[in-house]
Length: 301
Image (cartoon, rainbow, N blue to C red; front, side):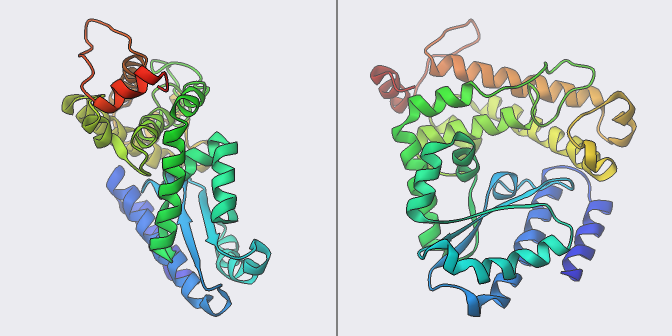
């Protein structure tokens, strides 16, 4: 783990903050976990895969991010314990915050149906190592199941709490209005509507929900928010989401640009919700997606 920790420390200290740095940190984590899994392969069951969930799965790992992983297996999880411990203990010993679950395919499908947070983490799922073809199929099955329940799932997503306003003097860049969770909800919505994991903003364009200019604003907002959160996580790991007044000096990107990004993300989310609900406003264009018309006609969006 020492080469990984050294490379991680160097990247956090020297990288230009933003989505590219977050992707590089993900790649380092992928390499470290893959190496640990390879070293523990003698203890592994015949069919197993390690899946990155949440922000790590989405390719958005920041200096203060927790790691969320899923071990998929085709045997009772208790039989996979030696392999899992061989992978996780070095990560824990290195001081990394790791959340993990060990599930079979059937257990994972049950879990995503029962809990929205588990579903959204899985919609960001990305196979790091192991039986990629099988694990990708499980992730696709979870997304397809969410699409069948689109009305229920979209309602649950819209009920997600988002404190504050994009215009607060001290905004929460993760859970607050316009923060990362609003961007996440747009990506989750794309996955629910298309039945594909990690569908992303481009799928919203393909579905006729947003246009290319709106997608560009979302990409720009995501870049600015990631840059601000990277610097906050580097300087203030215990308060890595709140852009407090006394933390502005720790963030290299202008605070006014961050606030503009929060507003763009939040207003785009509200616009998408109105479009999915069949609402109209002067700045909204008619929906063009046959899939959306089908959902609205059946009352499932």
